[in-house]
Image (cartoon, rainbow, N blue to C red; front, side):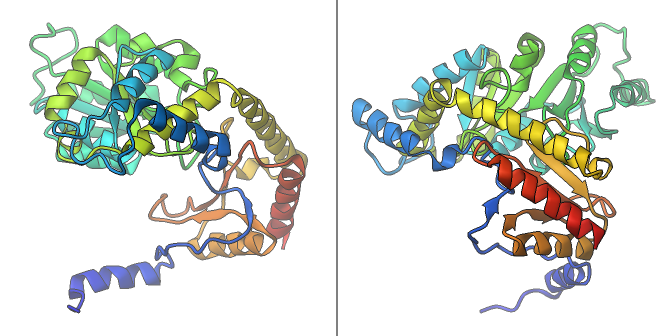
Length: 395
């Protein structure tokens, strides 16, 4: 085998020195507080059985898609799923991608054009950053959830010496402006004021893009946070994913029919990849069917568990060390990679599957324990987890 190049080995050595080397975890029989399976759908037998029934009903029994969707992979279940998603999420159209990463890469590498401006939250997901880097638009980050900083950055970017698109000029002469945020941030669990963001973008003629990965299936009676707020008509594009609360795999971009057609023609991560298998698409449909029927009860239980967790950390006096969140994601700030890994290890020894989030995944000094709450967590498990966390912090 060839020797790893010295520059690559030095990068690994730097990670070792920072105590931030990533390794694939070995599954353990612990009480789950780390997965994104918020509703427990990945373990739901009824979804598996219905997916098989869907495949049988449509006579689509192939093991693979056999090609990209533009060649041979656009099997009969795709239009069924996309029509369902558009109706369920109150969008004009939907286009399914193989993953949330693929969706963000395809959108941001192809939609914003040279001369356009992309402003993105400083804590935005890596897939969005990568997509922006692959495109030709000018881009700047703004302070987390800070609409006032967005306004300042727009003025500074459009009114600069090379900006030919001052506010107030005709739309034909100014660049398109894309404002990008998430409805629930994966490493903080918090949310921006989407009502204010959407109002600002509507007033200015800007395009708001919302990544709904950690809100899909949870808010708005199993839809998303944009739907829950009733602002779906003011949002240019939503990215929804199925690998979290929906318990399966894949993603979709929601938007206008014209946007869908554009992405089919120009999003390279859509064009040049083998499509999802029939079974994968059937599972997404089955998950949504389950959500609309028996799964609604899971939403209520998850909401109760979130309230219980917040009440417990307040009761034990450790809420001030958590990032404020009303979502299923709650993060305890524990600065230092070594310190947070040690705390996570102690909780795992007590039987709780809680993962440390290290720098450089988060900013140095903002390392944290990430607690993910689920509909399948019992009240007793949540109370014991918070009590043990309090005990470990006191040691």
